[in-house]
Image 1 (tube, helix red, strand yellow):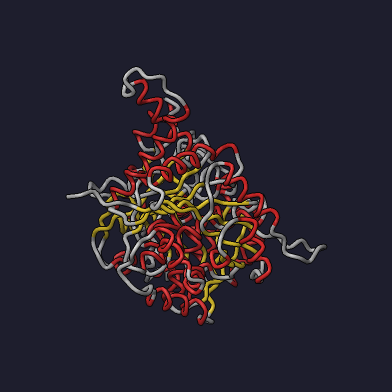
Image 2 (cartoon, rainbow, N blue to C red):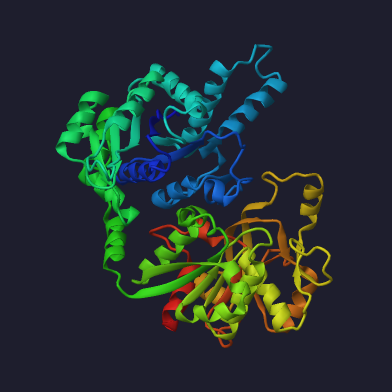
Amino acid sequence: MAKKKTKYIFVVGGVISGVGKGITSSSIGKLLQARGLTVTSVKIDPYVNVDAGTMNPTEHGEVFVLEDGNETDQDMGNYERFLDVTLSRTNYMTTGLVYQSVIQKERNLEYKGKCVQVVPHIPLEIINRLEKASEKANADVTVVEVGGTVGEYENILFLEAARMMKIKNPDDIIFVMVSYLPTPNKVGEMKTKPTQHAVRSLNSAGLQANIIIARSEVPIDKKRREKISVFCSVSPENVISAPDVDNLYDIPLNFEKNNVDNLVLKALKLKPKNQKADLREWKKLVNKVHSATDEVDIAVIGKYFDTGDFVLSDAYISIIEALKYSAYHLNKKPVLHWLNAGDFEDKKNLSKLKKYDGVLVPGGFGERGIEGKLNVIKYAREKKIPYFGICYGMQLLVIEFARNVLGIKDASTAEIHPDHEDLIVDIMPDQKKKLLAKDYGGSMRLGSYIAKIKKGTIAHKAYKKEEVSERHRHRFEVNPEYVNQLSDGGLVFSGVSPNGKLMEIAELPQKDHPFFLGTQFHPEFQAHPLNPHPIFTAFVKASSKKK
């Protein structure tokens, strides 16, 4: 069978970082998918880290874990959510990973004695990886997001790879620049000059933008569109106004109104299967987003709030979106409240939780805020406030239960107090060896694992099945030595590994509490706009009933 010829869309950024390349890439992919094409996405991150796993969330946002265990940039989550697909490590690369691969090949004599050089061997490795991702997905179109901003030293080699691809197959490669048009307060006029410079920087790499997505606070006017057209060598209709929106799920629909799918198809000389984009289900979602008025107030208790509000959405983006999807599915309007765990180390502040319909403690690492989280969990349990703990949030649920219900006063986790006598949560045996060897990168329990679900539990009512596959990212587990004692005391382990040794879900029976549940895995990684995660939906439903 002949190999399918894949078209490539490179999405690059101009002027500032965080301009919306990931959502733009996801939206373009969604539109082309709605035209009947098979689409896959690739994220290129220019940092030298081999993956995103060793970075603090305040450094680079959430670490998104793929099914195969690869720790990636949060934009991979956007791609999976918008396209409703499961991606793999072939869809993600960093400068560090590319160099690592080239050096390993050199060590293995795969270059047959050649002098291995930055150019052409690094760009060729990048091209090879792009082609593998396209082939694996059998893609008609591969959308490639190049991280960073055009003009930075870090992404030159990735642009060079794109230039080499363009020379070889000029009709199969196009470039979309997402650039920011500022409107300085004291000037009061939208400025195009930074975007002009960004396009010139792209030109200096031997590339020309086919489409410019003009990001701004307000829609651009005809004059600015014409100015960008003249100075950036694109047709006026190829300058797309992309003002700020409150709901990012409007963006594919806005792109459709602006004819983006047809512009892309024309530039790629590609014929779609559908004459018009089939976005019926997507439009139903957007209508729910705009029509929902019945609010449900969820308090998220975290520790990544001290560096400023701007990091919130990046540090917990998948959880935020998972809560939204379930709320909209139930025709509810989610209202999320960000509360710092450290504030609840003072028990006088716990009464503030009364006004919330549900409490969620997300995953995390380290000692900071742990006692505040434990106080929150105890309060939610005693006051019958729906509680959902994820990863660390489940481990703390178990510790709180051991301390305050079973009376094990010294109950703790080996992550924080390795010398305590009652380690209710302990490090996994294989992880001890890795930490002793200082094997930190990509060495946690990562990716998808099977869990068996116990009938008659909240988890089983939510999933409606007895076996599920969920994604993990952790080194510590509920200590098997305490499972019987915890179970006898009333805690139900409703999800366990197939061999029964690892506790995946802990909960209290609904006769004792409306919703008090924790998962060792991260269900948020598999929540999609049109397919909400059942555990999140069960939590939001319970929270709505409290109101």
